[in-house]
Length: 383
Image (cartoon, rainbow, N blue to C red; front, side, top):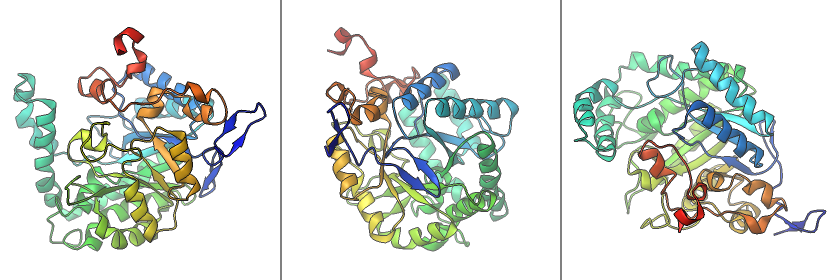
């Protein structure tokens, strides 16, 4: 706690220090991480407004599809979809925050998944098992995409970025998981053309996506969600091995990246990428920070951390040490949207800390009830 505000309360100075990324000024170092909410449109907009009003500098809106047709998210290309994203940015801006669009292409083999529909309808296939089946089909799907089609996919990132800018987004995040992450990963990518085999070739797809955004919007800040996987023990299947960062990072930066949002690679258990306090490996505060340490060895760009961040003393220390440059939170800002405001000297002793139980957030999403928090329940229900 480095200083006091006018009322005499402690203020976390580094947390509340502005940060500029390619001319975009963030008022502090806290952003809301991309989060699948599973809420109705009006509930979702209300939740975004509450989080923005709580003081977060920027909200990242997850899984905005770059292709014209999407089964799981609204399209920027349709009148209704564009209006939805315009309302999203309007609500965020009205409540004092910036808005970032996380652009992505799904790596799910939708046609191949049709065989599992009967089992899902009859509840013989659980959501967890369906996820496993989808992951099993990712490798053959990515490996089999015709090279002639790849250029159309990567170019669509530029088209979608232009629409996102028109809808009011202030930053673009290229999702380094999903298809970018699967092309990057030797677990899934078994191609023998210029998009496969070597690490440099496996980086090509992501670099083309970034370059398409940079060419379409030269002045727009571009963040890359850097999905890192590891062995010994094995976690994550898509994304980039720590040992491959020296190859990938210079290529990503040459393509036009301005900053990194560093996280564990997906395509494994959801409780790995959203780890509870009881996780056997990622139980600690800032559980993915070691990946940020590796990125910092090879890049001077701003690095955003995510993963189990709850304590302002801890976050302030990481920022002060320049271990990270800004921090992303999801569960903590769902538990207490006012966390950023409170670190500026307002009711710090009343912060509702996320206990990382995953009961009503990840649990609510998996049970199709929407993302909520145990703090939303009555006190007697929590105990």
